[in-house]
Amino acid sequence: MSSADFDAVIRRTFIRYVEFHEELESTSRLAVELRNELVQRAPALVMTDRQTAGRGRGDHSWWSSAGALTFTVVLDADHRIPQPQHRPLAALAAGLAVRRALRPLLPNRPIFTKWPNDVLVGDAKICGILCEQHAASTATALLIGIGVNVNNSLATAPADVRQRAVSVFDITSRSWDLTEVLTAVLLRLDESLQTLRDDAAAIVREAESSSCLSGRQVTVETPAGTVSGRCTGLSSDGGLRVQTEQGVETIRAGTVVQYETGDPARTDRQGPGDSTASDGDSF
Image 1: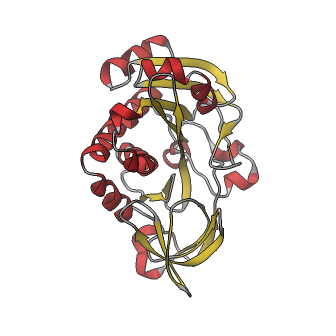
Image 2: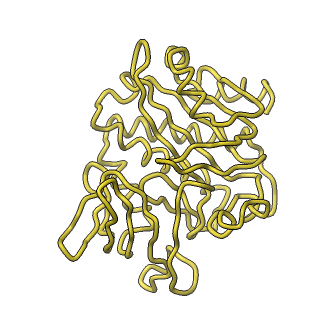
């Protein structure tokens, strides 16, 4: 993307500064390193055309290739989301923003969010999100890392990624203007963050209604161990509610590593057949 493209992004969205590199190991890693400078210029955007060692939740990595949108938005959390208890919902808000931005591109495809940080088309991952908070010199920096498979074909991905991920190009058989897609995502992100600030419960309700997990059997890896059961939705603070043999457990930190697909009662959320899907943070 050229400097003219970023001029348009700054003109049309809430972003005020862009840190662009043709290639980076990780936009989130650079954002952490530059957070003292970037938080003073926030809302700021760290972006690359090619990310070689993207970071995911925990020790997971993000696989990406040329044609994907890979970027990190840097915000002054004290200003943008002054209620600290609402900041853990930023990943849900970002996922909803991506979902809204992609719907006009894929009008005939079901697009869902998957707690806590993915966006799916059907049961295939099209976007991964990583949110972090870091103390900076003048404020708390909130970093929202987003990777969207747009013009990159998953035909070139490693086999394990190819089996569970998809791109807009692969679905539509055409390339898209990355500046326009980026602008759409950022506009929707601005809206979602405003809603999070003003009415956090609305974000939880929308995330629950767009979830691919509600009513399904799930297996979740948490810091305390593995939890399996039927997902019954989200708690008021965005935790995943799972009905286990011992009762309902609310999970606030973890990764869904397997979930039931193809439930006949949820035909709007799946493709044909009954199966299970597993996932991490690579895409």
